[in-house]
Image 1 (tube, rainbow, N blue to C red):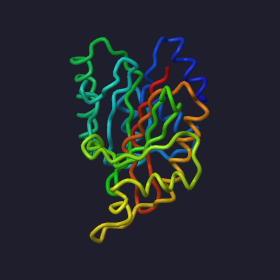
Image 2: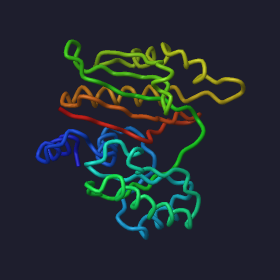
Image 3: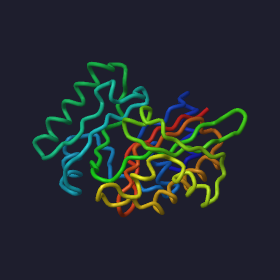
Length: 230
């Protein structure tokens, strides 16, 4: 489904928050690499996915009523084998039923769990004065702690994307630190450019967080995304 079709569906449902599964579709449409994942509606389908791509996995509850999955007990990390998958799948269902009995599940997103590399954030926000503003910085769970973010008004050039990376203090880490391999900077530039295009072509987007993006020594992959439209 194309982004405009997803946004139209949300408006019909009187929603403004995309589920993570819907946000993934938008990222994929713009060619942004995402972690391997599948929206499943049974344990058997989850098991088949795990057997196909291997462990460890992450399980996420997908529901229009659940914006903050962690608070609803809707995320289970580091599922390492078939036995843990069975336990985690049913535990996730119990968590959601207990903490968010009003939630209607679209399914459970079973996702490849990545490790290594550096966690960064690529995002955007609509500003009443400047329009769509793009952001880049050190990400993961510490994004608000580090407060290490650079900004540009959309649309941007490739030079702008490169400068955004250079402006954050963490660029020294991204270029390799204490023997760790440097991040694939061109892959990050590519994601920033594609995110700029997404924001430019979809002015109804009011908030966008792609966090974390795992910046590896070869490539960069988005593992979570949040999109809010007007």
